[in-house]
Length: 384
Image (cartoon, rainbow, N blue to C red; front, side, top):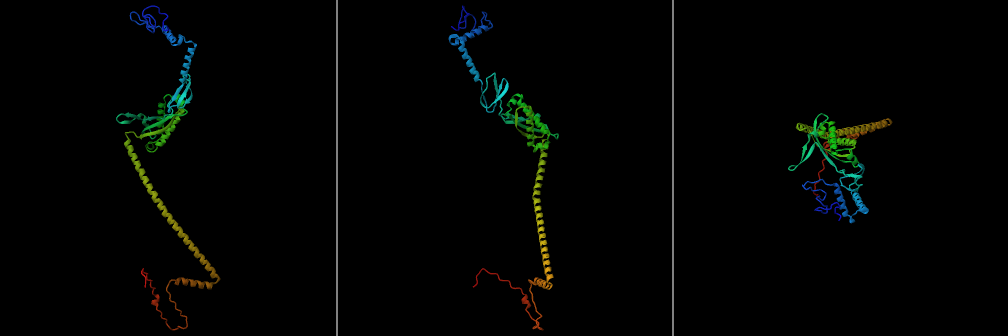
């Protein structure tokens, strides 16, 4: 039979693994119970015997070897399939050299050892907190722990400020190769660059703008400086956002700084109120001044026009007077008398008539001077 051992003849206890005192893998038993080292040649020979027993006819032959090789090639070929998750990006290496990128989904590469694949989290946005640590507490939930060795910074006017900020970053779409092969510790590199950039920007600024309204400018400056530094490293990292979480003076002087900020807020409020009052009063005064000026201009125009009209009338009268002095003198006299006696009660006596000589005329002067009676107001009733 195929399991028989050709070298074992007699002896008791001979089985399918052979005769004699040896075990199934050739580990002999000494009469005293001590173990002997295994015989490697015996192990290989018996393995070949078992493989011949699995193959029909007891012999592999060329066809059997071909089937085994073909099955091995098929399994080796199928080992080249790999899957890239939605937040990953595949990087295919050929003999350790970067060749191409693989998009999320099912992909294929030449099996190992020709090609291999790396799948970094290239599409995920990463977060790094600097100056603080988020600690999970089972009883109180999420808590923040301050890290002063990272957050305390020196400003340009030689003051100390406590800055906690967060950096969001990801791998560049076309920089996966640089990210994998140009930097060793990506998170540590980004953190070191972020802390250095923040210290440089804060060191160029004064403390008062940092505490009040210059946060946006500081965030923009740190973002640009970080991106410039990482690009010089060819790190393949894209900084998406720099967000300042807390900006305070040191705890020893925070009360004094808060008093200063309150005083500055009161100053700004008083200035705003004064400016509001000025914006209301000044336009009113300017409007009154413009009205007075326009009235004066109108009076001047009217007076000048009247003077020009009178001068023109006098010139015209003088021209007529030169042509006919007597007639013009008489007309001027009559017009003057008409203007004087117009609208007054007048009694004219003609003393030049010849029929009334020596007789004093009598007129009811009082009745003539009596003012005419006012008309009676009409009533609503009808007269019969």
